[in-house]
Length: 379
Image 1 (cartoon, one colour):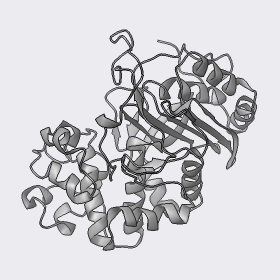
Image 2 (image 1 turned 180 degrees about the horizontal axis):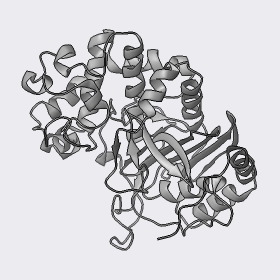
Image 3 (image 1 turned 90 degrees about the vertical axis):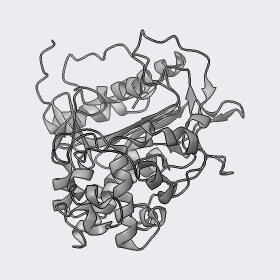
């Protein structure tokens, strides 16, 4: 294996990031090449010291209508939306309305009491609950076109058996975040979607973020496109033609992800977090701290805190989250020791990983060269 690069000093990282992200510079050239190869459609935003240096769109938001992606195009950010649920839970913690050690039954006494008495809010947030993903439920395929409320999501997991005892180990769980959404509804007295607007989008200045359904008449959504190779390793799938993947998605996102946002809005979200507008610094630091390691290192994230992902990029620790679903991916990397933020949103299979690799070139150590972009699974 290649040796681990020495960490880049923060001041050098900033200088490298500015140079690489400058319009017409290295990162934009790499992105142009990916687009010319048909391997990227979406938006990237690279910010240094809170200000975007590179922010640009490539490809088509709607191929049939001939509508191009722009910085105002709203993308399905898939599981990156878990950060919104995380922030709302953190705010309730800051307000003294819950503790991470609380049992689920303390706040949702009517939801499967035998399970609720054994699992804590912290275990749900850090993916130690024992629950899996509602995507594996036979009800998902039957009901995904009609799911529009949190109650609809709860019905998918009402009878889901735990895969292991809460706290026994780490295992990524979409179902656990549905329950966190229900806790938010119970404690705020608001519909989940209204609560996220009030508590996250509005104070962060995220004017373009929402949870539209696919039959929404808005014409600013990026249509997801699949070539049949989502989540399949390179070399194990022969890509087909690009086709509209909306019929494979749930009609509306929820607490585990599936909301829509833009790169500028996500940058505003990061800055609001860093500036203490959404969470106290103490809670943000607590939530970012590692709680469990991914079984496969070097992917979109290496580890999880309480609702935030962690990844080491060329020796530099970062936090954020990734998202991946059929035809749509997102990645938010926030450097921890220097003010650099890298955001990628994509609306075709396999586009996020090579784009994130190009963006991370901005903070690479001397002599580092990016691996050849690879097709395959995104997010």
